[in-house]
Length: 310
Image 1 (cartoon, rainbow, N blue to C red):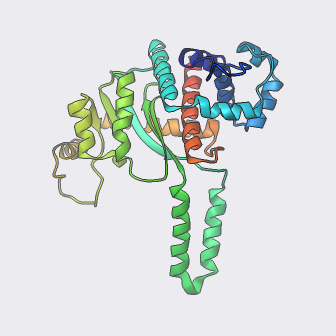
Image 2: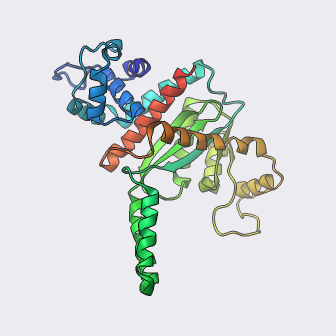
Image 3: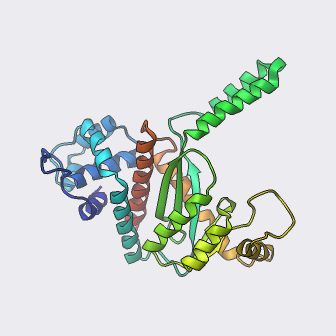
C-alpha cells in the first residue's frame, strides 16, 4: 500500500479539481484501489477492511477509510490511459534501478490471455452445453450450432489482456486491454513500442499468434529489435513462406537456432498465471471500459508486488 502511494504521488495530482472537497487525495485513493485488487475485494469489502486496519490508513496519511462510493468514483477518475502509462513508466524505471530488467541478456516476451467478465464456472457451462445436446438428439446439428453461437456470444464479451513482459523478472513493461477474442497480430506493434520506450532490449519473442511479415519489419527495420516468432499462421503447408522474414524464421526454427531465446516465451505464460492466481480470473466491473481499466490496474498491482519482493 505504501509503495502504491509512493507511485501515485509521483504520477498523480493531489486533487482532480480545485472545487474538490479535499477529504482524500488521489494518491491515497489509488493506494486503496490497489489494496482492493490485491485482496480481491468489492468496494464495500475494501472499505470494511481498511476501517479495521488503522495502521494501514496511517501509513498513507488517512484517519478514516474512504466510503465505497468515493472509491467507485475515484476508479473512473484516476485510471485514465495517460496516467496508467506514466505509472507504468515509473515502475519500469524502478525495475531498472533494482536490477530486475536485463534487456540485453534476456528477451521481452509477448502474449495475451482472456479473463472472465464475471464469476462463472466453466465446468458448469460445459455440463449445460452437453445436457442441451443430449436432450436434442433428434436435432443434434441444430443444437450444436445453437450451443456454439451461445459460446461465441460469450467470447465476444470477454476481456482480453495483451502483455509484454521482461522475462528476467516477470515485470510487465507494456499492456493493452481490449474486449473480445481475435488475432494477436494487431497488438504486436503497440506492445513493442511501449516496451521499447521503457527498456532497451535486443530480442522480442511471441507465439504464432503474432506471426506477420509486417510485425517482423516493424521490429527489425524500424525498432532494431530481433523478433522471434514461429511462422505458423495460415493454412498448414510444407512450402517455405513467400516473405523474407517469415522464411528466415522457418529456417531458423527448423535448425533450432533460436531455441534459447524462444524458450523464454513461457515466462509470459507464468505472468498470466500469476495474475489470475493472485487477483482472480474474473473481473468485477460491468462495462467494457471499466473492465479494461480494471485489467490495467491489475497490471500495476502485479508490478508493485514484483518490486516489493526485492
